[in-house]
Length: 71
Image 1 (cartoon, helix red, strand yellow):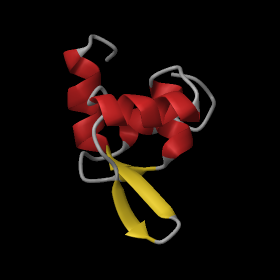
Image 2 (spheres, one colour):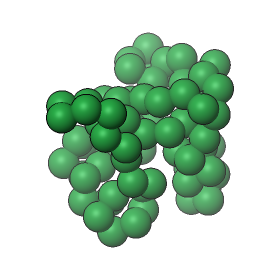
Image 3 (cartoon, helix red, strand yellow):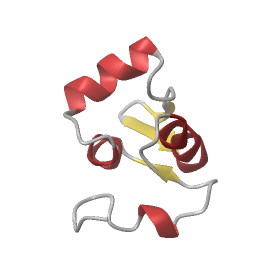
């Protein structure tokens, strides 16, 4: 894995949450594409923890990545 935001993704539990930069790095795409792909159902929908805090569940991301052969 890279040294960017997703560097420790593999060490997180399935119940953990990650922010947008990690998701973008995992899918090797831009933040804009993350949101497009969420809308199209390619990436799991995030959760809102507050008015300015959006997160993705690590377990859901792992399953989605495995389904498309990225993990």
